[in-house]
Length: 402
Image 1: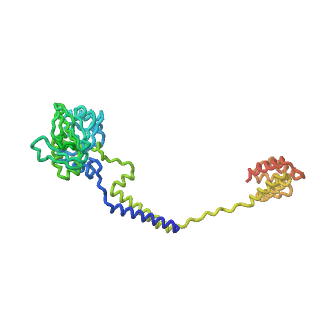
Image 2: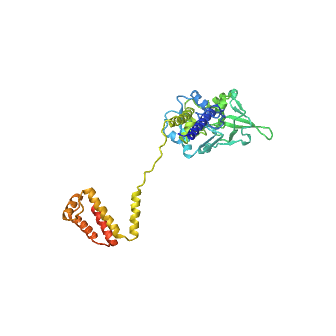
Image 3: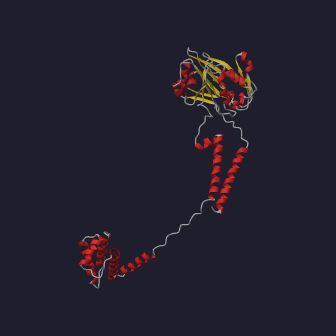
């Protein structure tokens, strides 16, 4: 390995070490992305809530990682259950809405908390929501329960909240369980709107519990004196096995490439860095023990062959066919002497028979060639056609060389 290559490898190694040190020492920015995922410990994740759901569940927590339409097709319906959706936007298509309605009509409960809730199932309940964009992340919201006995669990959300409420409900089958109070920017008057309702469905005790403040269930608020409010909201669910939705989440884990998966995992990321650093070290030290590249030396060209070709072309261009024929006859006779060890002084019948035996040609072909040689040697001048004919006969004869 030459000096320039070594310097380049040292520079690459130094850069990798510097990147590793910078990665370790740099402060990590706080991630305020909406997630609501049970696996996320960021402020707007639901890691804390998911690990405390055992308090409200009768049995192990079930987790749905697929479309609710697909999940409910295979679920055990012998016992009633509670299905929980928490996300900033919750939307259901036609099939999902039918599956949810059928699930509730069998006596199950569905809890949905979202700033926006869409879908046929919500339309069929005659309920709609509205987000107060003028108060987005600015105005505090006083979330209260309508029951006086729950007054101690009311909470004021001063930050990290998007104010949303129900704009219309079906008063015949909907019960308001909680409200949110905000201050109007224009005249400083209080606006009280429902943000927690229960809708009873069918005769089997099924119900929808709808809520418009999903931020209340995030890690940020549960660890900042809002856990009693969240627990009270969930207490409206009957004590039965809970199904946690992990599919309709803004922070659902989506791995788009193997490298991204490796870099998102701390242990795998460090294993990747160490492997790359080790590879560079291997190249550096291995390169010192490898022999230098041996230069390729081209073999010497056969100048004699090129010279002979050039001389032959000159003879042919000048029409000196007699000279060429003489050279070819001499070359052929030398070939016979060298390969078959025959005396070529007398080209008689005995010579022809010995030539046929040693060369593997028939006696007739041998005789034809020798007779033609004798004929050409008897002439003083030769034509191009005779040269061509001689060449054909010699080539045909030498194909059967032994």
